Amino acid sequence: MSDSSRPRVSIHKFSSCDGCQLAFLNLGEELITLTNLVDIKHFAEAGFVDDEACVDIAFVEGSISTNQELKRIKKIRGASKYLITIGACATSGGIQALRNMHDANAWVEGIYASPEYIDSLDTVSPIKDHVSVDFEVWGCPVSSVQIVEVVRSLLSGVVPTDTSEKVCAQCKRAQAVCRMVAQGEPCMGPVTKAGCGAICPSFGRGCYACYGPSIDSNSSALVNRFQGLGMLSEEISRKFLLFNNNAPVFSKVASRINNISVDTLGKDKQ
Image (cartoon, rainbow, N blue to C red; front, side, top):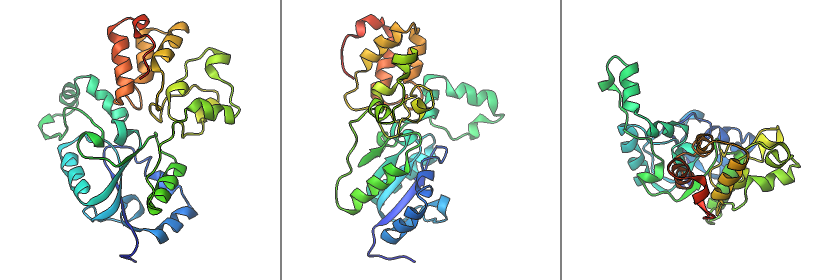
């Protein structure tokens, strides 16, 4: 039942896999508690459908890849007091933004018999490229813990805070053996924002940078370390151009690797 005294919330999907919306559903009993604190106006995956509702807080998952999405995000921005992007797709374009580095139109023409009916923009872009965003929650996907922290802050009238911690710190707390030091394997942990709980290193895999670039990360130093492991420039750039390839920090590093010698990167912090 709608209650006008409670903050109105909507959760929208654009080009994405729905994984970040699941962070809400995976809250379990806490989701029930949340519904008692806010009035959810739109969350199609949970059965609430009102895409044009005026709300206090709009959570947005997914990137902008079609003209229809471009029009819709502008309407959502105009109908919401605060807009929070959740996940790699919404914050940096996500995996689908990899097509920005290729001729996507050629793919469409090669697959579809009538490519003129495909509504697709020339590039995939994050939400902030088109409308103002009040806060970004990074991750692929984001975690339920992150969602709870953001919602609690907003309901308390406090501006959400971003972590300055890196995945390496979480590795130490989880007592995970460092893949780069102990095994000589590439790992993006030193330049990646914490939040996942160091899942991959805990299971014997290097970090894939799902949570995006950390604050004040020395990407150039990591590039030099990867070179020391015998990795080729193309292999190194691929490490940065994956889940968050459209993040300025990562795309800038990859661009410099592909155009100049790694030795000339120096000690600049990205």
